[in-house]
Image (cartoon, rainbow, N blue to C red):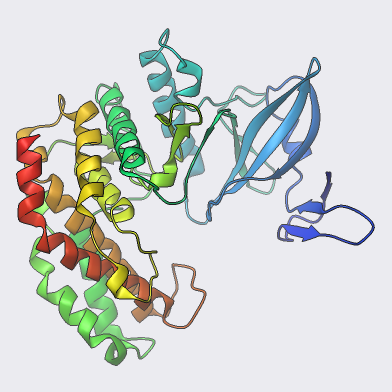
Amino acid sequence: MKVDFIEPSVDVLKIKTATEPATIVLKHNVRAVAAQFQIHGDYLGAEPYGSGHINDTYAVIFDQAGRQVRYIFQRINHNIFKQPVALMENISRVTTHLGQKITGEPDASRRVLTLIPSRDGKPYYCEADGNHWRVYYFIEKARTFDAVESTAQAFQAARAFGQFQKLLADLPAPRLHDTIPDFHHTPKRFAALEKAINADVANRAMSCQKEIEFALRNKDITSVLLDANLPERVTHNDTKFNNVMLDNATGKGICVIDLDTVMPGLALYDFGDMIRTTTSPAKEDELDLSKVVMQFPMFEALVRGYLDSAEEFLTADEKSLLAFSGKLITFEIGIRFLTDYLAGDTYFKVHRDGHNLDRCRTQFKLVESIESQETEMNRLIASC
């Protein structure tokens, strides 16, 4: 496959003619970036990799003494992550600590992301135009799934996230940087919604009265976790199912990835987002709300997997709020979608009219499904 470079402002294109194979056109000069990292061997090529929507990610191949070795290159989106140097300090500290904790254990090199330093020894390289890059060793013989396919997979993902929190429970001072301040501060998210309702800058409030009323009825839940005096942890803050790599041979959760939002937080932020993103079979923007339901078997798999690795460091108060966390985080994401809809779709990318409102509706429907099963969910947690 031929790989070419064109102007950085041009998006990734795929060109195919009748006489020659597809040519992948990259929007970054990855070869030039690669020369700035401590990687030996000959650069062979790069291609876009993964399904992420924030950073630019490439799988890059080097010839090292006749053996092809892959690396993951990522350009950090500094429009989202305003402090890329602080972000990389977090990732460097976290991956170093995780690596030290599992040194000597089986498959240690595949169980934690490993950063490749730049030529000047930093965990990143900054181009003259301000783009920050990082490089990881490619974890072979493992993959991610965009959607969970079984309760066994849900168990493994939850267990991996629990293990991630457990190993970082003793991360030494100083405190990690807040890469996105107040990311899960639900009362502040609700205050932003109220401001958007009152301003109604896009003249959309009348089209979502039902959703506004639902949000206002549930305002009292927004401060429950913050008022519970729970311990601050090192948390992932983006615990979607596709942020855990599963081993191809065993199906076990082998490595937690996408560490941009690792920062101080509550353990329940992570578990709540697992419930939100794993238990419903519906897409996040599903139009048929009858498909949106919290599947109890998936929830049970998450609970058992998470507690299998996290139970020993969680407090009784944290355990008692596990089920509630799913309702709160789902509600929080719902009000964020609603806020953006009212503001004229200024934050989340949309692909159709009313897209953010559709997303809001699926979240609120899932909140209702969780609430209807909350007693049974709490009973299961108590039994575990």
